[in-house]
Image (tube, rainbow, N blue to C red; front, side, top):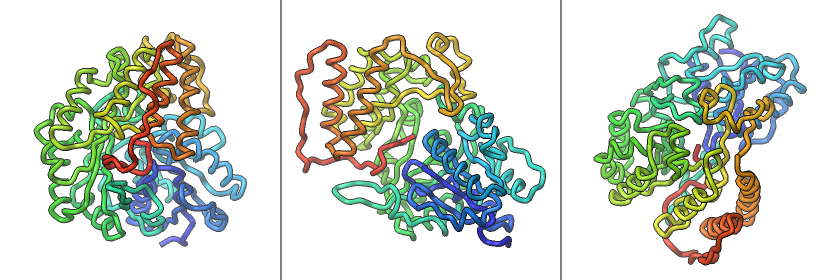
Length: 446
């Protein structure tokens, strides 16, 4: 084995979860005889000693927030240890390669990158294109305990949650998603025995809930069903959640009852909008009517469906945003939508599939490399102003610990006022003892 600490795997943020983005590379490196240390800046303080002894620092950036934090960390590493190599790992590393390779990083890797990272660490040749890997079980030994990460909040209790992946990539090509420009519709299965062994280790470490972090768990419905059956058979008290497209929930409606029976606490689905215009321009593959059908099917099966949203795009209008707030503020969906979901604005990174579509061109401005995306302006200035207002409102409400249902009602009132409409429902203050559907303590889904 190499001297401990010469390779340092760093995570800055992974949606509140114990980071797979460095646990899997660590396992690949260990299988190759290369020892790596870890540092998760989301929950651990900066460690000068680890930085000083590193000859290679690999920073995981699976999402925009992680990239922003990762660039700051890389610059700090470079100041403190100017002779070490710095690489970035993940989808957003590939999309922003031109910016990162201009003085911030020495190399970037994305997709199925682990074998390429191993070769890079050995200073041998490599092919960074996505290819089928032989997966080891993620190595979590040097990561902070699960108690430091997101938990499942259910019936007044907070249950440690593990984070695994049963697949990578995605079969679909939703235009705003960062996955298609990297995977190009490719989809890789992680063998069941690897996923189950990872779950066993997480349960032994205290997990009572498992989040399947796949971009879409139902890309491989047979694989997904076999996994949850095996999980439930071995750990009948452990619950789980996963993410799936609205179209998959409709196509595989016959499976929903079994998901409920095997301990599915909730399902996340990228609804994005209730506007058919928006959905067509994002090429989501579902319609407004499909969304309501999926919610009805989930409810009938005894499942909670939690939508992720993208309410600020060039095609959303004040009217359609108000309809989305009607949806979020309805009794049927009370406590199933986190207020932050009603603030999300379209991000258009370099390489985005949206860039090739005529529909975005009238609104598009210059690439801002340091912001990791293209600027765009809404055709209705009220929508850009509203975005700033709702973001400020939700940020303050979250800091104050306001009941999310009351926050959504205040958003509803604010948007109605901006549209020149009366909002007569008032700000609800639901009873704190009400039954609240299971949710993770980290409100970001994707």
